[in-house]
Image (cartoon, rainbow, N blue to C red):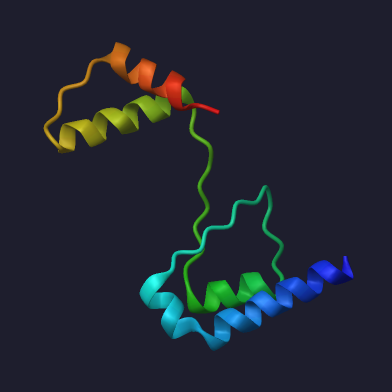
Length: 90
């Protein structure tokens, strides 16, 4: 656990020291089951933005795909939405 804490502190320090360059060129994405409210979390919260994305159910994904297609004036039927979801699910 100590080595992990050191890495978190080093990343946090790096972000703080290089925030101007990072803001211009980088999007950092962390994928975690649960986020520890450690120094790194607090640094990102202070200097950037933290977003939580919940897993959607297939029906919710289908509704979202339909809304996106409608906004671009693209017709898509339910069978194609279902096929797209089946092909892209992990």
